Image (tube, rainbow, N blue to C red):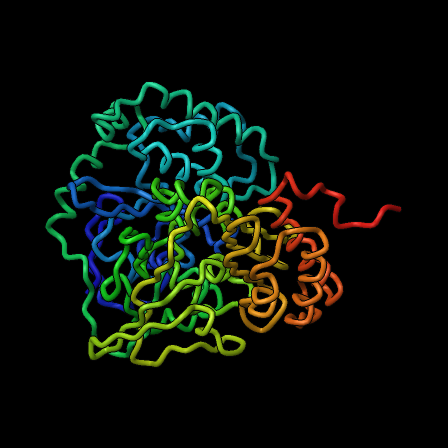
Length: 470
């Protein structure tokens, strides 16, 4: 049985745990405010809030797309739809801001925007312009344009300027952001178990952001198990290494302040990965086992020469480099009795430089045509060590081993990088597909490789240094 709180109501459900949260909300509970749009996590019309009880006893809320969320993943949580934010006899702050700024037309997308804006208000921090705009980055409107919605978001931000961080929930209730029942949620969640009965077929699901795009209807007829009960979540640092639990999300990376000491541009990189809702859901290990040739996290961690700790059902473990994990298209080195348990990599020192590049049809909220990352360690003006990855140009996320070998002990120069590009081109074999032609992808591979060095060594490379004068 799955137990969770939906708005104010305690849910006890004995049906298939693979049913999507969206289907459950609309068809079982008959709450029609949450809309069924793209069913791929792109449009945000199905956005709801997912509240999890933290170790210190308060509830942390995040926006998620209910169309890609298996019901198993909401065990022990507080799920809030647009109906669960309604006040008696008046609009809440987000609803009023949308109304005052004429930020709705057909209304189909409006519930998702309202949920996202309420979600950012619930954060235990001071909220600024970037926070409110990023909170609705995964919500699409096809009618109004976005200026009126942006103005509504800014109205919400202005109201939050006076938020009392010491009494966050009470302040939000008193100032008409959320209804009063939110005060009772922490105590109600404490009485609820968070794990799920592990019976039936073993179909493990992380965040669901890939597998539920492809197989939602099929999985809705089955029972699935959340990997959160089997693998750790969180980020730790020891002996100059970073260790990341397999159930850690992209948002967990974004919110980890210590990582910015080693990757100052981390948010810029991860904002390219997906919308805020998908970053809140998608797990690092899930991106690996998706095994997409253009998986952003696969490319990111390949360049860090990461290792995977893999756990078997008998509680034994083995380690493997991520670069050896991918075998062929959608094939990887993981047995039916195994799960990725954690990821680890060496932390970069002051002489090590990292960069991530991605080109897609849209800058944000899109799948890459080509993506690539580099991690380069310099010593005495020469390459001491280097790891380079690239996606979208082979059947697997590619670690560029031959290009790496060529660059070791080389002095960085335009001539050296041009020679390295020739080797890079010999290591890839792109195909024509919806994201570009062979020629286009080879061009992107070259240009993004150049971009790494222009970004890391701007004093050495001018923008036109790789190109002949016309």
